[in-house]
Image (cartoon, rainbow, N blue to C red; front, side):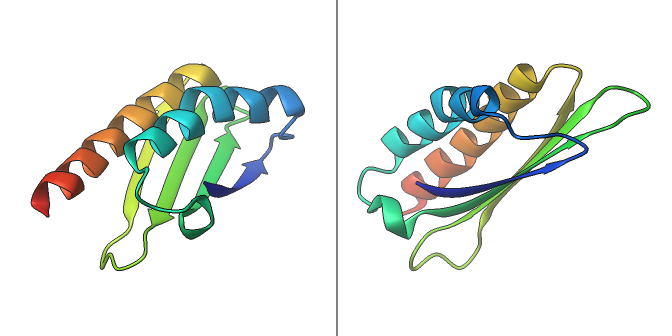
Length: 101
């Protein structure tokens, strides 16, 4: 998957990238094997709220030939938990998309 990660009030370190790849990207790639990785374009925005110490994570992905994009947003105190919640929301959308065909 071709994913662009943007951090707001947060530096996207190698550790964060690895966690996102392991907990998010690899699992979504397995749900969409029929699409080449270069064709799956996604944007992940991670924002850390300085005041409340929460993470807001937003995800958008488009697939070739699809009218609407996949979109989800979640908020959590832990970045890893927010990432897993976000993945689960996107997995539901992908499964719904696959069964609609």
